[in-house]
Structure formats: structure tokens, C-alpha cells
Length: 355
View 1 (spheres, rainbow, N blue to C red):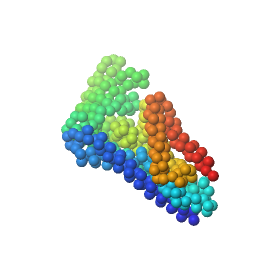
View 2: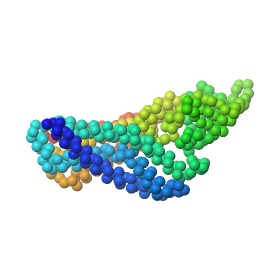
View 3: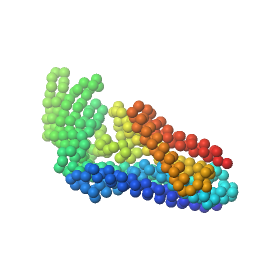
View 4: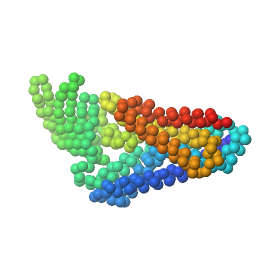
């Protein structure tokens, strides 16, 4: 019997959450398209702007899942409560903890769905969308296509003047320092790239070495270097934190820490994403606590309003803490998990008050 009731509640909550998510994504996609109209130029026209907005829908779905889960659960469970179905379940011997466990299973299903989107679907599509947008706006022949970036490999600092989606770097400058931070050499390659074995091929390489007995210049038509920076790591360096998967974030955080670089921004994104995914599982349980109160007799509008208020409070609180954590140098894990911890505490208190 419990299994049948659990499946029934799961179907109800998932159907309501899916409907809410579709509505929110439709609105978000429309706003995304409208915002892109100001940047139309060259080959980036209205059809490309529509494609860009569509490609960003998965990452927007990931960001909206906690709010969608809460509103959808409030609507689904609220309808069950309004029809006295939850009261019948309680009368049949189901305790609040058992009902919370059933709802929690639905939350776990949504957690898995959210994690899959946030890891395998959203980040690569967003990265492709941004790359497509740049190519369409500036064109392949434009010098602005690509990004200039700095990367560090131990005592060597690499300045890549132009990096495009094919990992063609154009000019490359290499600055090497000693253990005492004294400049040992400056080198420039007219063109650089990474081969299939992750070796750096530097064309028309010229290096000026600074020694105790003078300065020496070295030139070569082709030089192969084994920098500890491969194509995947370089791609992570060029992408925004939101465009990286958890694996990419962990890899890039490890690289930054190995090279004594500041990894707070990427650590904040990592913990922010993990805590947001966890919050998806808590939202249906929180909604359950509300349906035992005034929302049992309230209408759909009141449930929707409660869900919007709590969801916005959680979203704005998460964003504010994540941004302020970077400004004031706070612990990324703490500021990212704090809203979810507060959510769990509020849920526990609300359930404990149910009789």
C-alpha cells in the first residue's frame, strides 16, 4: 500500500513541477531572447539569437529547479490536501515522517534529474552557445575572435594572445622565473597550438635568456614543449565557471591550487552548484509541512504565492551570499551551503509543529 501511495504522490508532484518548470523556462527563454536583440550584428541575427536562447535553457532549468520543485510540490500536495487525500492517508496510519519519506523519494528523483542537467547537458550547451554567439557576431576573420588569456605552469607564465574554439593560439609569450622570482627568460612564438599528445608546438620560437654572464638569444623554427597545461585545462581556463561541469571545476581548482592561484571563484561555483542540487530534494519536504496548515483549505493562488515568496527568498539569498563571499573573502563552502542549511532547519521546525 505504501508503495502505491508513494508512486501516486510522486506522479502528482513530478507532473506539477514539470508544468511549473516549463512555464518558467518559457518566460526565461523569452527574456533571454529579448536581451540578445540589442547585440544583433553581422551574422548574429534573430534566428541565431533564438538558437542561443534555446541552447541556454538547460542551464536555466538547472538554476530554476529548486524554485520549480517548491512551487510544483506546493501545487501538487496542495491539491491532494484540498481533496482531503492526505487526511485519508493520515487516517490510514501514515505518520508525518512516513509521508515526508515518500515526498523525499520524489525529491531524490528530482535531485538526480537536476544533477544530470547540471553535469552533462547544461554546461557544454552553454559553452557552445557562447562560442557560437561570438563567432556569429565577430566572424572568423575578425581579430577579436577568441580570447586573450594568461595561464601558469609552475615557474612559467604563458600569455596566449588569441584562443579560439579550435585551440589555435596565435602569438604566445612565455615568461620563466627562478625560485627567487627573478626573471630568467622571455620567449615568443609567432604561432602555437596543442597536438593530439597534449604537446605544445611553438612555431618561429625566439627566446631571450638572462644569465649571470650576460644575455643569450635562442631561435628555432619549431619547438616542442611539455607544459603541464593540456587542451582540456586551457578550455576550462577560457570558460566561465557556470559553463564548466563539476569535473571541470574540480580539475581547474586543483590546477589553481597546485600553482598557488586564487581558486575562490571556482570553489564558490562548485559548492553553490552542489548545494543548489541538494536543495531540490528538500523543497518537496518543505512543501509538505505547509499543506498541513492553512494551505490545506487555501486555493491555488495562495499556494503559488507562498512558493514564489520562499523560492525568491532562497534564490536571492543564495546569489547575495555567493557574491558577497567573493567580495569579503569568506569561505566558499560556508556561504554556498548556508541557504540550504537554513532551508533544512526551517523544514525540520515546520514538520515538528505538525500534529
